[in-house]
Length: 356
Image (tube, rainbow, N blue to C red; front, side):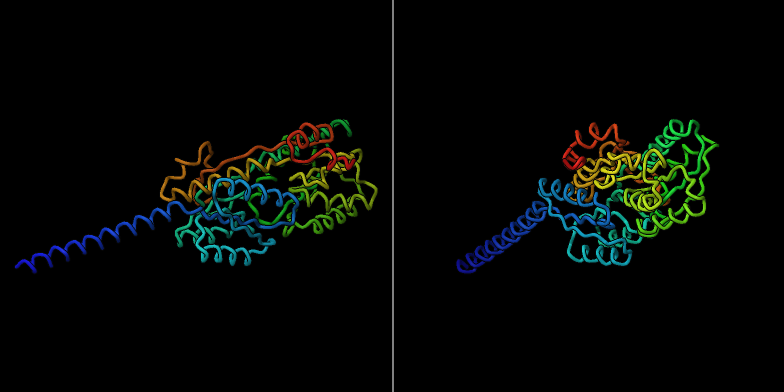
């Protein structure tokens, strides 16, 4: 009886120890899982424009300073490659993906794929359409076009004496939602001035500066150089247009108004030299920082309601639903405002802009 009694006690104690040990192991595992560094996938559509080096550097620095690991890639404006990159990130166990889509019309499939794997997606810079995006961080693209067109109106008034003239709208990727938003702001202003004739409204595959140059060359021939303005969705497109104007001796703010957007350094130098009239400075730091911060918060609390952690935001309808969206500011940059915007803002140094 005594032996049996002590055997029972020892067995029970052993079971208790094992149970306690397993429980401790589970708690330890959960603690490790909770304490591990969030892994954030950051995927840009391209590195073609100089600004994206800044996006990458700021995003990675911000995320890593807050204890996250960043897996970065860019897709060279290749839709299929971007799909493969998303698949690879999901296979590698990424916690949250921050995505700038190559094709805003079809990238909803990438979000669906991520959701099937339990991963949330934060849109970056370009709002994808008809997809269940969890959140969005973007610049005020509508204001970009408005600022460009308002500057053009002022230029026409001061150089032509009245708000009339031929204007070419040079868009980016066909069907791209961001290109549409940029252009809609410009068209909204143009619509208020019946003397402005939009002679072409054309999209350019892959946001190609070379294609923009070809468009400008064709228009200059068609209209015998009698064009007043080019409004371009980004800096690269504006640079392509200016290359065509240079060949005709027209690359001057005294002759033709050209506006770009992204404030690439080469374009800013042209603004300083009175070759290009306007650039739009999309402040990258708040864009990259807010996206990195939001992705980390989601990774740390994946079951939380996005609205509870996103902070100040607007609801933007992307065709699928109203997406919680953080919108960051943009600023017009002319020759007269370069110092007060880009240089005082720390985006470029005086030496970089003026090369002295």
